[in-house]
Image (cartoon, rainbow, N blue to C red; front, side, top):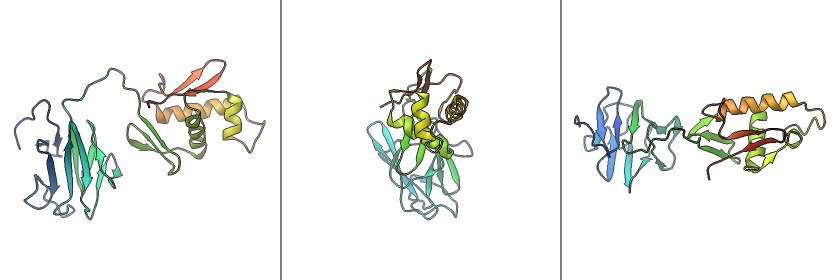
Length: 206
């Protein structure tokens, strides 16, 4: 697989820079020579993972491997759709996914995912770590997304234990810290907006 990929065909690059085309409807990865992409490492299972084509999408699935398959540092437990730039770790080998047909945007709106029940927050499909108060603030704004939340409302939701003893600077500092973690460019926020004289608003792409 040393030829250059066709413009519209997704492909992996391995640590040596070698390109592996994902042309077939089903591409398998593993240690056995029968695989589409053979990876010779003792941490790779014989049948480790597969990439399935669904229309223009490529779906990554682990095949019950011993050491797991990871996408952007998260273990693949259910099939996941690949996106340009994703990092796929198969055993101990890191593959970088390229989709030449991806539409490039001048300013990409951040993709925010909030799983309240699991306590997981992802930005552009990568998990981020929040402090307890940062998480409480995000959960409140997420529940009220698209609406303006005043500082008084935020204080009651995030600091119920202090009632009327929450100061503006505490709220502003917490907003600043949360922005630093969820915004691609915190200086030009797209998700968490300041509504001058009114409060704050969380925007999300539906």
